[in-house]
Length: 161
Ligand SMILES: Nc1nc2c(c(=O)[nH]1)N[C@H]1C(S)=C(S)[C@@H](COP(=O)(O)O)O[C@H]1N2
Ligand SMILES: [Mo]
Image (cartoon, rainbow, N blue to C red; front, side):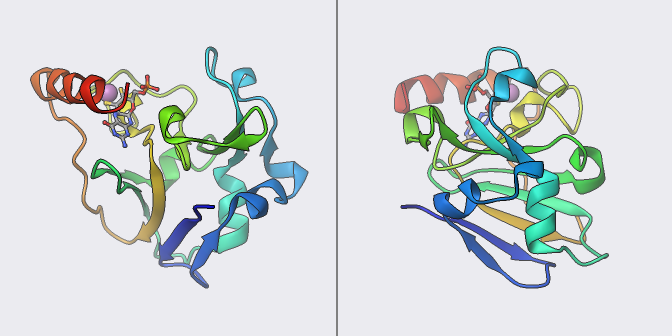
């Protein structure tokens, strides 16, 4: 079972397993993601829940979202997503498989359209296996314009669908 590695400016590093996600306090559970994001489904914890577990240091200002499988990364200001970010860990109660963007996925309700803002749809990082808290903006290879974006989706269609 793949764990989510959480590192950086936090009290203690973590390797969160599916079971640990399932056992997170109900306060931080989202049993049905579609209630927050139309058209999506599955189970998540809120970013608030992750912060409660990992206790970031005051210097932690950015969230590094790493998808190792396809080498996709985003680094976004923590403050901008602190009250709405989600970490999806399951679909229909089962571990998220790669076809569904697993093992974990970052999701942002009310994100901006691709390439229009820091907090855009592109930051809904799939294949998420590592979250890193940093003081400064970290590595980010989200597409920067429409051409890059189109090329990325073209690649996606060949490799993962
Ligand atoms: N690991 C990874 N996550 C990713 C991407 C990617 O190529 N790799 N594409 C991003 C982009 S550009 C968008 S717009 C959304 C698309 O999410 P969807 O396939 O669920 O619609 O996923 C984002 N997350
Ligand atoms: Mo995107």
